[in-house]
Image (cartoon, rainbow, N blue to C red; front, top):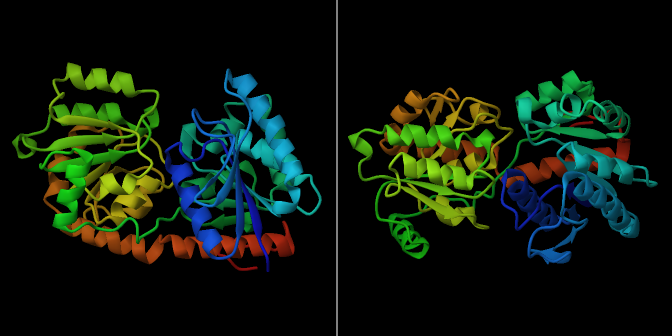
Length: 391
């Protein structure tokens, strides 16, 4: 069966974040299996309105500006692309349930199209909360449209599955498919490779504990800096490396300065190749207040890093506490402070973490499950869908 997909999303490469990273990797894997993929996304500063990203046709539509202007221009220009390119896709796969879902619902009205709805966040700041509680005027209409026209919904974590059921999605239309990771690209580095990576990235030859992600409230980096300020002598020579960018960057830099951490905390800025940094690290930390299925944690575990994460969302599905990493409560500065030196002393956590990812979250297997979903959607639409990949 020939399959063609339009990925509809808020942000895409070169923007860096979990959903963006996952969608690019998934699109690559799908193309390798003969699936035709295109992307419709919002503008990005300095990026062309159209380009092929690693062979994937990418349309950046709309204009920047205030929320209303940006939102409406994205919907109008995006619909124009979907109409013009309607012969290039059969399935609209929307990532997130705000404006991308609205655009995909509009495209679903075209003859012969199918719609896959893929939330990426959970909890108070997640997709379901945003559409059902934070947008009381339009949320009910969009929920009703999603329930009527959504052929399948993807739950990347158990919490999201539960939230979709609470929203009214029938069990048979929910497919449990986690985010995946390229386990060849994200693989443990040898000592020589790690030294070379550090030289190239201008990182010190010291124990490195790393965070990779967006600098947002949800990621809990303020908690991490407070814990780092209270670290004991075991971490005297260690460095905390924060890879990424976001709206809280200046506030976090100021917090680190006020805590006297200028010499021990490194802000690298954003990157389009997180593998380089993760393979240069000794351990990984993700102090999030909320998560879906964190791609950065998947990548760090695939690189064989001992990982610390908070017990939220998909992180609690990835890590068996004390076996392949450490789980702590969100907002717990003391627990985080104690876990940091522990991660550096437990290389066996990283070995078992790598094994978990290879067995359950390799992108090859995840892409194949999506192909099964797409085939079922094209064959059966909203009827007889099954979340375990069967029909």
